[in-house]
Length: 82
Image (cartoon, rainbow, N blue to C red):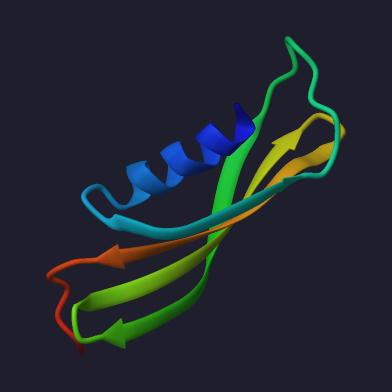
């Protein structure tokens, strides 16, 4: 379920982008009724012929710390190079 939260965060941040790679790893136990926060940080941006590629480091954090870490790569089609 937490991997899905990471994917939803990417989709929410960049609607219409194409997911080209996604990895995740569960780092700790998550418990029912705990409150979680999903976040991320842009790790890399590069221009390619068919759009801008963005790599985002993602995480799910619960009351006791990070429970899931992930990395998503998306292509922003139609983004012009600067």
